[in-house]
Length: 179
Length: 258
Image 1 (cartoon, rainbow over the protein chains, first blue to last red):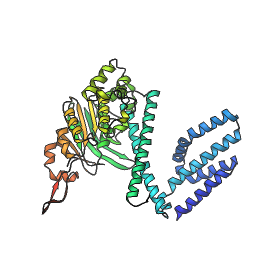
Image 2 (cartoon, helix red, strand yellow):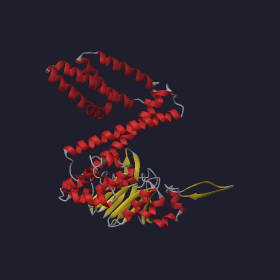
Image 3 (cartoon, chains in turn purple, green):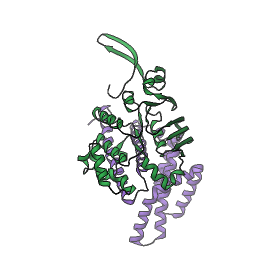
Image 4 (cartoon, rainbow over the protein chains, first blue to last red):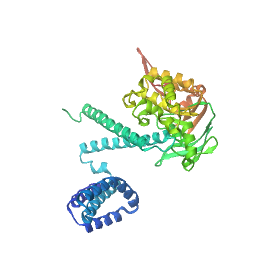
């Protein structure tokens, strides 16, 4: 029950965060989230930073180049993204998603499938990094890093498509859906 | 050459290897046997200095391998050339546009001059010369594995680590690989869960139990006669057999071809 109530609050907070336009409120909300995160603050903040750095950087730079430096708007956009990302990571850390979605078997199945794919891909990703490290006699150059990224991305896209069709066939085979 | 002493390693609190001690001499061909999840791959990654013991020590040629040691550029250069690892999934090792570039990758990093000759030599030796201009991504699993093996062997390593090298191969390619490894005059450490081919890959076996401990270090033929140890390693099992109208039960080994 606790997970479902937290889930409800999370959804309301997401709606709220997309509607407010006050920098002060965003800062206040971030302070509140920081207090709620307690000892999880540093790991959640690290994850948030890694997740938003590129996106926020590109958006901010593009905005400055096109519209000039508007402190208010730039701060608003960045704070909104940081608040929502931080809140989402904290939510996932604190709430048992399987319990949250147990009211719907379809949502539970989808969650289990997604989760298993995330774990599988995480393992593949670690193997890719280790393989590159193992084969690198010296630090790889830009071209080599680019080649590595391209092949890893290609692998994950191909694997996703292949796994999706396999999972879809398996679900169909087990009577999950008919077409 | 390779010495692991009281080595333990866990992944986020989940034990992978526990209190492992063994050494490998130059030129030995050693097989690490164990069921899936027993810690075989972790041991290879420790030997390849991709993971570091959380307890115990790992020495390569007498040098203790630590994260700090692996920041010494000169040492890393020498180590990565001498100790190479063939990953179980060759896809993770491939990132060059052509098979030629894939084999040449390490040689270019070393700044070698006769790259073309070396690539051609190893491509020819592994029977993939005709694939040199192809993209490695479009090859079959067995071909990819040969490309990766050529890329590693072109560095003329001293230690070849092979993680379940026959797991994705058909019987013919498995036979080819066994013959190929047999003629290599370097130290080879191979992991497998397949008892059927373990004996073909080396005389000495290191066997891991389900609880990630080393339970046997010695002659593989002797190990295969030891039912207690085979059971402890969960490498044999019992079930009913039916032959026409007769039914009986006994312990037996399953390998990939049966």
